Amino acid sequence: MERNYFDTISEFEKQLESTQLQFHALKEFVAIMVEERHALQQENAHLRQRLDEILEKEALLEKKQEKKLNKSDVGEGYDNLARLYQEGHHVCNVHFGSSRKDEDCLFCLSFLSKQNI
Image 1 (cartoon, one colour):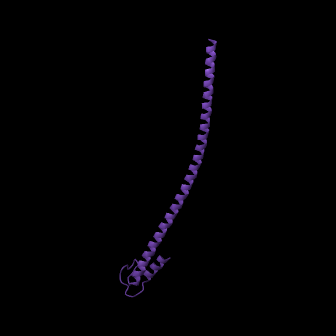
Image 2 (cartoon, one colour; image 1 turned 135 degrees about the horizontal axis):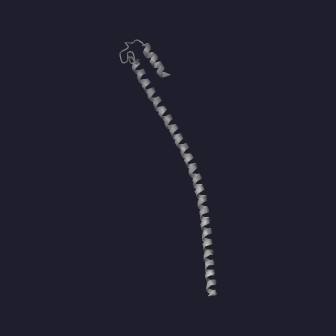
Image 3 (cartoon, one colour; image 1 turned 90 degrees about the vertical axis):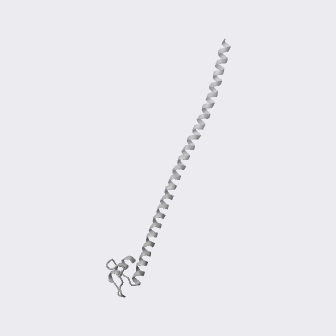
C-alpha cells in the first residue's frame, strides 16, 4: 500500500513537471506574440502616417491642377473675348455683342484690361 502512494506521488510529480514545461513554453510564446504585436502596431502607425502624407500631397497636386485648369479656362475665355473685340464686336456688359463700327469702346477696353490682370 505504501508503494502505491509512492507511485502515485511520483506520477503526480511527473505531471507537475510536464505542466511546468508546458507553462514555460506558453509563457515564451506569449512573450513573442506581445513583441510581434508591438512591432506591428509601430509599423501600422508608420504606414498610416506615410499614407496621410501621400494623400495630403495628392490633394495639393489636385488643387494645383484645378487652379491650373481654371486659369487656362480664364485665359481661353479672355482670348475669345479679345478675338471678338478685334473682329469688331463689343465685349462689355453695356453693348455686348453689338458691332463697334471700327470705334474703340472704353468699356470694352477697361473690361479686357481687368481680365488681363
